[in-house]
Amino acid sequence: MWRNIASNAMTFLVVLVFLAGGLLLWAQNEYSAEGPLEQPMCLQVERGSNFTRVSHDLAEQGAISSDMIFRLGADYGDKTDLLKAGSYLVPEHASMTQITDIVTKGGASTCGTEVVYRIGVNSAEVQVRELDPETGRYVERIEFDPASDEPRPEGYEAIKSEVGTRFRVALAEGVTSWKVVEELGQIDVLDGEVAERPAEGSLAPDSYEISPGDSRADLIARMEQAQEAILAQAWQNRAEGVPYDSPEEALIMASIVEKETGVAEERPMVASVFVNRIERGMRLQTDPTVIYGLTNGEGVLGRGLRQSELRKETPYNTYVIDGLPPTPIANPGRASIEAALNPAQSDYVYFVADGSGGHAFAATLAEHNRNVAAWRKIEAEKAQGN
Image (cartoon, rainbow, N blue to C red; front, side, top):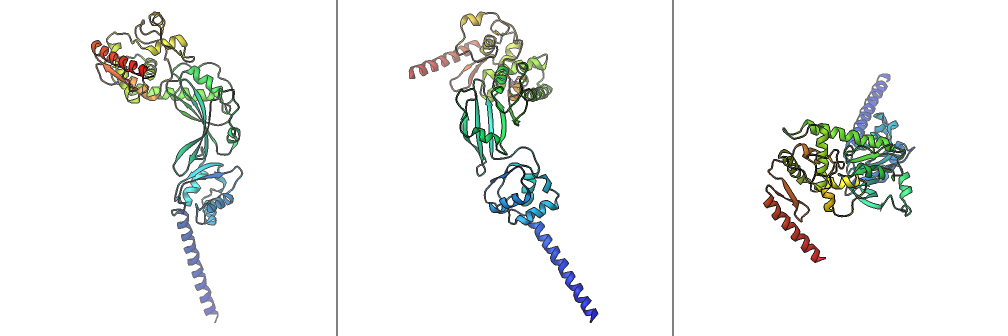
């Protein structure tokens, strides 16, 4: 009898082991399998939250099949203490494994609301945008001029304090250092002062993630480090025979290219015109340098250049001086720096606006004069239309 009881008990234990093993295997497969979420969602993880609360939210929104398996899987992977507050984009059909990684890896939030401080060449604005999880596109909710005397739009202060709100400063290509410092002073989530204006050309136009309380001086330093790296790499990869004695001279040329065209694909061709003029001993004769000499990069001239200004000898008047001006005239972007150091191969030494937003290029003065006449005709027709 005892032998039968022992045999039955052993059988029962074996069955239990197999059932437990099968259950564990099923749970593991369920944890890593494709999830039930039909559309992307933005998951909000509040400060002080835990995996129990997060698993409940996910289950309630149909993102996971079992909140218990989600919690056990995170616990088994030693990730329950790694939960990070923020707003996270959960893609459709994400597995529980993927979702666990998303909410524990840290870093910036990947969805929700972001505040973008845009510093343009002639203006600045603050944009509050929200990511639509279904389309993956941002929708603008609030927009205003930070320098305006008007009260901040309703909801802006509340959005700044929300968990998961991200902040960015975006510099436009061709913005001057004076403009950057002026507008950073208007950004109310930054602290501290900028002791002196950064050297013209030393700041990389780009988008910079910031956090409330960051130092303005530290942000400037990040911009300078980024531009140094871009210039160093472009200088290392420069075309053979470009007429610059140093990376600094290339940066000056890049700033001129940046201010002369807003058409990205034209930059290497515009650079080729100025390189050809230097190599032929011709003056650069470019209006943006003259304007910089008048404004020192502080604001816009707001009118056309006078003949007396084109004839006056200043360090930046390239109608009068030979070669490059003494400093950059703006902060050029990566594409203009690369164009200056790898210009197109051409015989062009002239260009003028063509009426389409781009330019007409010419290798001879006669051809250039025809292009100028065509441009003036377009201007006259526009004036009559108005």
